[in-house]
Image (tube, rainbow, N blue to C red; front, side, top):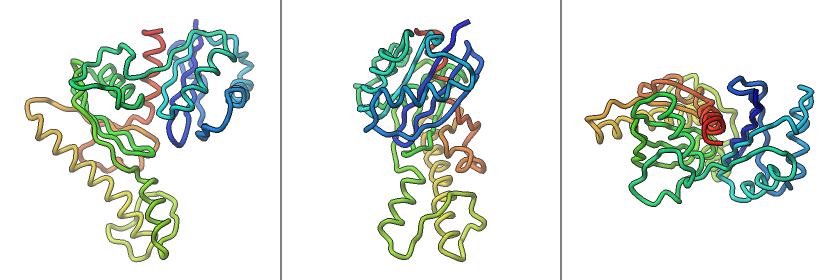
Length: 256
């Protein structure tokens, strides 16, 4: 049985996951820091593996995706120097059976992996929305056609921006708003940020469905904020916070 190590490298966090074949053993988060060296990340990863009495040389395969170019280089060095495993970085050029009508080089690896994972897991035309540092919305066909994507500021990114620029607005902890219209600054920000983003997603998804009326589209929400934002969304069929990791695991097992 093989041990697989997966990394989803985002702008704010890196999600690491250790699997024995398809069985998850451990998953953790690290803060994204492009200034750290490969050796530093190697030490952190080994510390995560240590409680399981799991030496690094037992890893047989490593797959990672990154939206941070500096960390793509760092993790490439890490895979080569810290492990004796086969490894792969997933990019737009990775042969995953997706078909693009335009040059896909603008696409981040997160969009590629999410599109692949949704098509493979659900076997349907899928709208995938990923709620992280940015919010992305994309449509992928069950046949692998990639129809395009939209990118907008994420919920926390928007909150941080407005509180930094408005003197009377303070930082808030994201949670479900108590009212549609807040009676204090915190509740007003929560309603605008959480409810507003949910309504935006519902409206955007309805527009996409209207643009492709002959397709029966399934909608998937993922990312760290998906359970908070999409719990009451009318247009979301399922919330899968682990879509990226599940996609990376499938690539690891079937492509590496």
